[in-house]
Image (cartoon, rainbow, N blue to C red; front, side, top):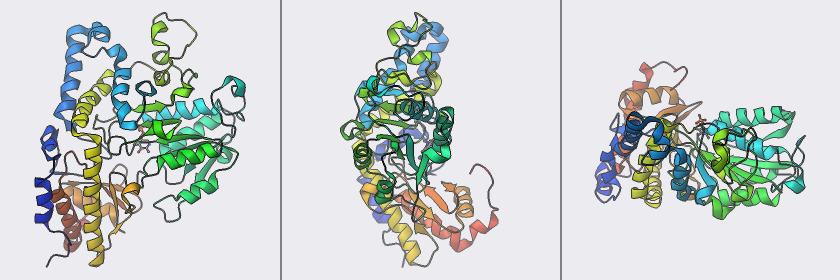
Length: 440
Ligand SMILES: *Cc1c(COP(=O)(O)O)cnc(C)c1O
């Protein structure tokens, strides 16, 4: 008798009924079990098509591509911002693609620090649409590190001690951050609550609306790093009245390694001068007047810095064609079903005495697109899985991240992945590997 409470046949039957199963053939996968789409989404024929179109335009039209491209390059960042807006529930002019996520954190945290009353040299409150006073930023100890590097640097540049001004909410269990703990960190000295929409390690999904309300109740702004949810989880930043957000395009948006990032700025802040101004964020109409004074574009486009990197933006267009066709609500629904199945099978393993545990919240509303499978030997188990063609990643100290991305992973494959988790231990396959160093 199998130790799993769901059989492979039952899982395969769900694939037969799955309206999204047809999308798999649109992707080129390096392995039949690619479970790492939360780290780097795979290439699709759609993404390749738009990339190749832009390469052809470069070859055939060169400089004229700026105005004569099928989607003129000159407006491409705004065009793709419009296309992304529905994925975050925003108005088109509130979203643009620009920079990398890290750079976007620098410019947005910097911009808003310049507008909260207690920052040295802040823009006077009566000249600013920003209604926040404190200059403490609340983040959390389970954040992706780059976010903290950027925030700390922005404090230093304003003569503020990062150790005093960056307040980290602690985790009780090392996996998740509790709403009460965030509430306890909010005081009158807080200017910005900056949180992930989903934690990169455990996959805990936060309640964006509740956190935004919490921040606003304390006279603070609410900003989000949505790198681990855009393209997997629908967002309603506008309805929730979020102040600003950033995300990347190479995870669930499948736009390619280092693809251009995205950002959202609530329209009430359009017209502010960004902390990292550049000519690409200058008012479009006067950009080529080449004046030496900067005039911000009256949209999120102002937070662009330099020239839109067309070759790292073009794949996003095709990828969005595919995502639009699949529909984000169907994507989210299947993602929840896949992660639920995976968590169930991992629980079966732990009930049977294996050292696996699920580190991701059970509740659908609290779960992003991946499952954190914990094991004391996670590093070596991850390597053994990869050798078997199950592409996962390891995050110290004990997490195997497994992402059954709904556009190219099916239910039977999730079963197979769980069975590999079992087999690696049964066969001691992980013991042949050394602890890894560097990138895993
Ligand atoms: C992936 C990720 C980033 C990556 O930032 P880059 O500037 O694209 O390297 C930042 N923050 C979070 C939470 C992430 O998951």
